[in-house]
Structures are given as structure tokens and as C-alpha cells.
Length: 65
Ligand code: FES
Image (cartoon, rainbow, N blue to C red; front, side, top):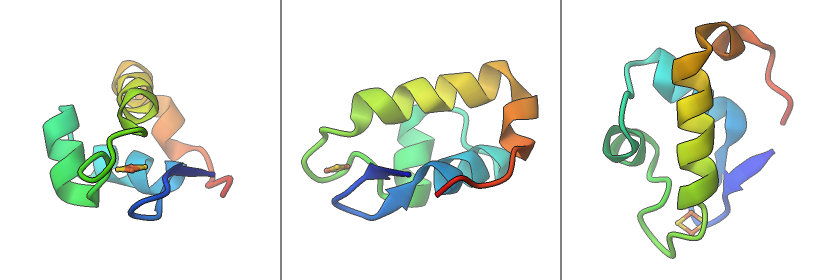
């Protein structure tokens, strides 16, 4: 599923970024480009980031794009 349409960032890409070390929205944006254009994805991306950080197990789920 696409989270950021401006940059084509998927849910699995965000999970991969968290696995790769993103711990803040700023880091996530830097690594994926998510939220750096229109910003309409920011709330959903932030929620997914927090979900991944709270439940590291969810990072291991297979991609559902
Ligand atoms: Fe992510 Fe526009 S949808 S910056």
C-alpha cells in the first residue's frame, strides 16, 4: 500500500527504513522522501513509524503492497 503518493513510498519501504535505523519522522523523511513534498502523508507515515517502533515484530511481517 502506498503511504506517500508524491514519492511512491510504500508501507513496506517505511518498515524497511525503520529496520534500517529511522527513529524519527525527520530520519524517515530523509531516508525515503516521504512527507517532503505536499505533506499529506505525514500523519499516516508518523503513525506507521510509531507502530513500527512500538512493535518491532511488525517490521518482520511480509510486505503487503
Ligand atoms: Fe507524501 Fe505528498 S503524499 S509528500
